[in-house]
Amino acid sequence: MRILRNIVDFNKKTNELYYRFTDRPHYWKVYQGMVDEAVAPAKDVIHLGCGPLWFGKVATVPLDGKTIYAVDPDEQALARNPAPHHIRAFGDAIPLPDGCVDVIAADHLLEHVEKPEALMREAHRLLRPGGRFVFTAPNLLSYTGLATHLTPYWFHKLYVDLLRSNSSKTTKGDAYPTFFRMNTVWAVDRIAKETGFRVDKLSSGVDHPTYTVLFPGVHQAVMAMHLVLDKVEALAPFRITLTASLVRE
Image (cartoon, rainbow, N blue to C red; front, side, top):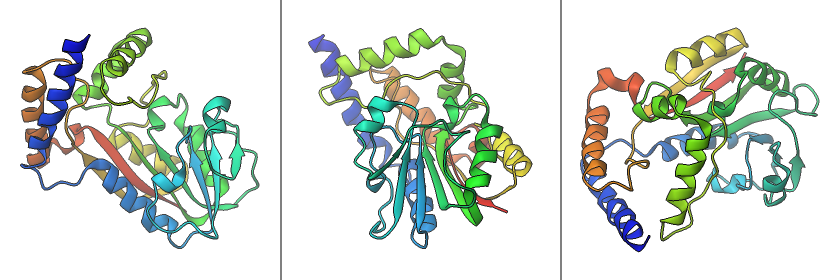
């Protein structure tokens, strides 16, 4: 297992090469920018599907004086979240009154939602007019999205556990069932319009490979493919991530 760990560490080290050849910001920075823009003037925020992640690790603007609701159906994960307001609930049925928040932020959630239309209608109910639903999620039409969608759930769990056991650092996150019902640029546009939202910003992103770190040579070849995705604008609908800010109308 030590050999595998050394391979993982070496491949992660070579990820630095990717950022020498791209000017595109990492998708998380893009997401944080959209979140900050929405949250700065807001008073009340829902961090949807937050797990144990404190929203202060997502937003970089001051949160003093704002009400942050941490919402997640996983009781154990929610218990580790330092947010002062916890709500154990799924995204399509959140026990809060109509028009009570200004922003709903969701990172790496939409791919796990079987009925995104129901979630977005609930978001529309909860948001004040002009409020924003901001999210980042994997793109179904990327090679990683397709691979995830077409492989069984047990394999996802096995591979995540393997990555975790062979990493010199703690690997965050668990494998949850995926559906990818709102994970293309076209699905985002369609479902947003159907549920009363306007797409204000929609960005597709590429960053360094993550799922090939166990395979030397393959990892570097995939990194080269990522650079092609990054540079060729016609391939934008097939990049790795989707990040968007939707306005409640």
